[in-house]
Length: 439
Ligand SMILES: Nc1nc2c(c(=O)[nH]1)N(C=O)[C@@H](CNc1ccc(C(=O)N[C@@H](CCC(=O)O)C(=O)O)cc1)CN2
Ligand SMILES: Nc1nc2c(ncn2[C@@H]2O[C@H](COP(=O)(O)OP(=O)(O)OP(=O)(O)O)[C@@H](O)[C@H]2O)c(=O)[nH]1
Ligand SMILES: [Mg+2]
Image (cartoon, rainbow, N blue to C red; front, side, top):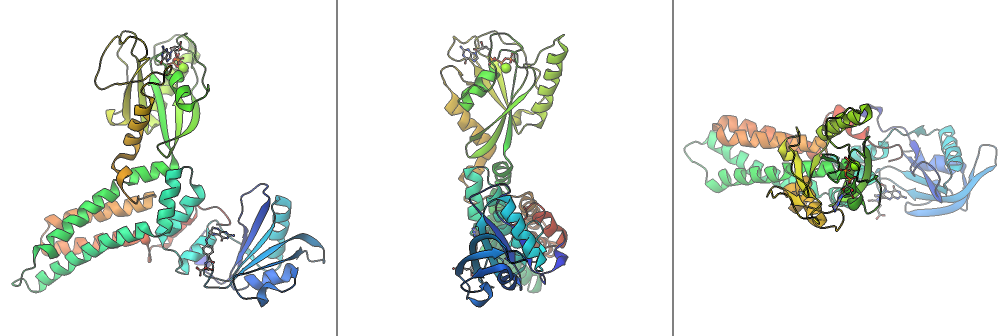
């Protein structure tokens, strides 16, 4: 898709989910939206003849005078619509058969099939949303957890844009002060005009950048791998966290051979829990393949739960995952412990002891300081821009005035990309390509 397509034509798409539903919507946006709707709708009044904000009941007809379905037309007149253009929503019964026929009919009447995200792109190009808000719409459509939803709703309401705007104001204040100093070096500028806003902007940016990992985990979800020796209690812990018997548990070492995934929500983050084969040297070809897989899965996980049986003698585990991505668990804490290690959290899959602490530790690990922050950076694009802004601010604080002023201009430009008024087409294409058709 390219944004170069422009806004001249009228676009149409099925905006409700693929598959069946009680009600489905074909949405039209553009200068001819109401004319096209009037071309197939038969009711008391034509969509093109009523003011915005009305709904009409009637029949949707095919070219030969037959009826496709009965339903409603919602009429929006630009700029008072989602896209800022004239919009007609054809609300019909929700089968693919009805929706496809209705879409085919509006295309016959001159609409063009919308590209993925094109309604939201039009809303952006018409100044109805900024880029951070457009990304928030994407976040809402794809929200897989309560945390993801909450952050996206905040983003749609412009909270991220506001936060970034405040930081921008501090930087601008410092920039003006530095430029005054460059022009009139003998005058000097007070601390509160230069050093204080800069230091605060840096602190704010550091806090904001620190939310990026949480924001991305909340939207894409996190992978947690359970790793340990055979019989350490990996499958039992997976079942205990899930609350149902997903994985086979037996007293025999080497029960789990292939890996197995299960979904749950933990701390507001969608989690894929991965049960793996116990790590050991083995002659069994299948088990050996499982062990290799377990090692790979540990490498690819956002967090590795390292399990060691607390009720039997310790045996060194060959873990290559960096320690900052690991949480250590001493399992079977309902049995008399054979060893003590401060770094390990005692848990029991049998009594549930320690599971609350485990959830809390996972939450702290995945969300870090972001848990306390109001708004998060939710896309990689936003995180990248904020990080670049932060680096320019750090440079500005250690460089001589003329270079500092240049760094601050770059910082402001990077910040402006987050809400994005004049970003490149490549960036726009990259964002809107992730949308679905009809959004
Ligand atoms: N049926 C339907 N439901 C939907 C949408 C939609 O497009 N259609 N939306 C699509 O994402 C979301 C709602 N977003 C919308 C945002 C603004 C306007 C709109 O028409 N705004 C005008 C009029 C406001 C008013 O009447 O008070 C405006 O702001 O001027 C419509 C939907 C979620 N639900
Ligand atoms: N008392 C007690 N026994 C447990 C606990 N967790 C697991 N067990 C027992 O330990 C044995 C092994 O448990 P699994 O969950 O199958 O261990 P695993 O790590 O998945 O083992 P493999 O799949 O062979 O790698 C079973 O007999 C479980 O009943 C626990 O918290 N307390
Ligand atoms: Mg197992």
